[in-house]
Length: 419
Ligand code: HAM
Image 1 (tube, rainbow, N blue to C red):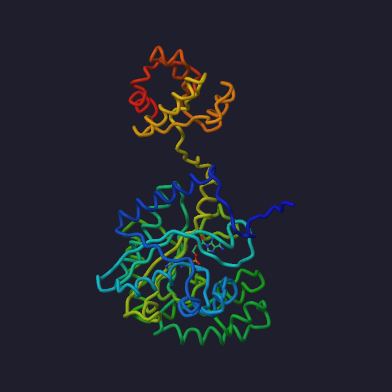
Image 2: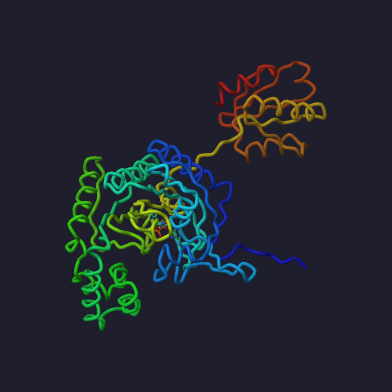
């Protein structure tokens, strides 16, 4: 008996008909990141659990509730990576990359969070992210944010930028104590999640979307008004940098992000096209994290973008899916033609011309149908007659017109008409 097995809930296939969109946004990312001096790093999908417990924070939902954790044959406690920053820092430290001064790295790949799946929220999803190590100055924050916008606008996407400062270890503790006191005073009107977070992670309470909590949260003390002098100066300089680069933003005092490692700059790009899961990219500064994970004191700032979410935006915009299709589909009319199309296809491919054929052979009509299915630009029928004449008819699959073509000059001709 056969059993049909489906993909794991919240984990998606990207089929050939849709993958062109992913390839396009990845290609534009590579191009833009190179323009800004970011180089690619590839790290494992599995890391020691402790990396995330220490790096991202045990109190976060991501680590505390959503991570896929397993024992490797009863020996090591491992986790599927829920995000890319911790693993990238682990690699940065492990390979002593810090000896070479500031580094700008980027990565692309799957991440895993056991969230409740819905539109734009999956259990396996993909991020494209960057980390800039070794630069404490606010110019890099501004440059990086401008780079995200540059990337998005090359894809025709305009996303709103929200910016905040979440302070640093000098100014945040006193603020958190005040915030906790305020929230405790209003516990009666807060939701269960907020009450729990008031103790564990009070900053995250500000992120609550439950309507009943909003009046209390609107009246909560604001960290932006309590920043220490260095954090205030940093924030002002990031804003000035964005202004100078022509990047529009909105200061959002309640933007706190879902990871514990941020200090000072925090930002998110959002799009209305996404519905409830409106954040397409998010990031910020994490000075101190490299040290926490065993490296030398090294400031850092980075972001990650959700590929599925960007693909949804592009789809909503009606942007066509780019596809590389065969320039020509070779059709065999008889046994002689069947041998010829095999030979000719090999020559064409060697010459860099994309071509395809129906390896099943058979009736002309079926082969033409297949040519249409794969979206070939031209079709060329080959049989004993064409081979003897050294000439065939190149059929334009769009206009349905036919023009004679010399078989010997086919590659050059196709490069002209279907580059
Ligand atoms: P994050 O905000 O948790 O940040 O994730 C970044 C982006 O990943 C989100 O804006 C969203 O587009 C996408 N994303 C997150 N969770 C899901 C999900 N379940 N399904 C689909 N897409 C999702 C980080 O991960 C940080 N590591 C970013 C960073 C890099 N900060 C500094 N450097």
